[in-house]
Image 1 (cartoon, rainbow, N blue to C red):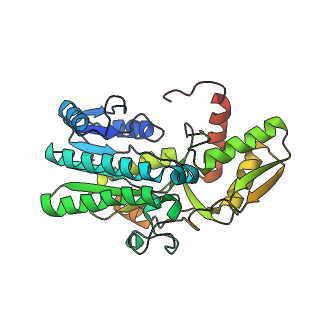
Image 2 (tube, one colour):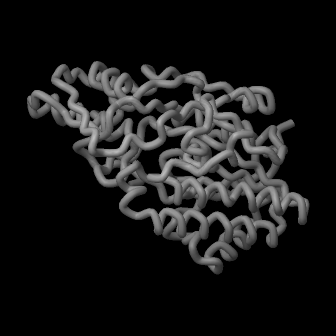
Image 3 (spheres, one colour):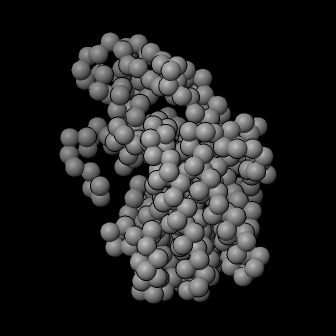
Length: 318
C-alpha cells in the first residue's frame, strides 16, 4: 500500500513549475487532502507563517519543493540570498514539522550539492567527497544542510525524512526569464529569437564542453511521488534520466528542433559551471521502482511547443 494513502499532505512550492505536477501525482494516491499554499499565503522565511499553515492543514506528510533557484548568472549575482533563503526555509520548515507531529518529510535537494569533481556518474556515496562547483556552491550547500538536518532528526527524534537529489529539470511552464532561467529555456529562447529576427548567429556562455543530465518535469514529479509513497530510507536518492549530453550537443539539438541554422559562437570568458553532471540512478530504481520515460528529444519538443504557444501571452500561475 502507498505510504500516502489516506494521509493529509502539504506541498510547499505546489503551484510552481514542478509543484503543480507533483500535486497532480499525489492526487492519484487516494490521499485525504492536499494543501499547496502559495508563497503569498505562507512565507517560509517567517516561522509564524509556517506554524500557521501547519496548524491549518495538520499534515501527516510534508513534501518540500519550494526554493529560490536560477541559472549560473543568478547564482553568481545573488549567492548570499540563495544560501540564506534556501537554508532558512528548509531548516525552519523541518523543525516546525517535527514539532507539529508530521510523520514523513520529503525534501527535494539539488544536484548542485555534489562535489565539483565527483566521478561520473555521481553516486550518492560521493556526496561529501569535495566542495561543490563554485558558481552555485552557496545554493548547493544550503540544500545539502537539509540532508544533514533530516538525518540528525531521524537519529535523535525518530523523525522520518526522505531526501532526493534531482538533476536539472526542464519542460513546459519552465522559467524563461533572461535573468534567472536555466540552460534549456535560455537556449530555446535565444534560438527562437534568432530565428525570428533572422540573426546569423547566437552567442552562448562558456566553451560548450561541460556536460549535463536533464530530467523532464513530468518524470521528476513521478519520481518524487514514488519516493514519497514507497521509500522510507535515511540515505539520499538521485533522480535523473541517466542520459548525459554536452552543452555543445544540447545547443545543436535545440537549434535543430527550433529550426535555427545559423552559427553558434561560444564565449569562453563566461563560466562553464560544473565540468560534468551525470547521476547514477540505480538506487531510485531499486528502492522505489523509478525510471524516467521521456527522452531528451521528446521533452525538448514539448517544451519548445509550449514556449511558442505561450510566449506572447501571460503565463498562467506566473
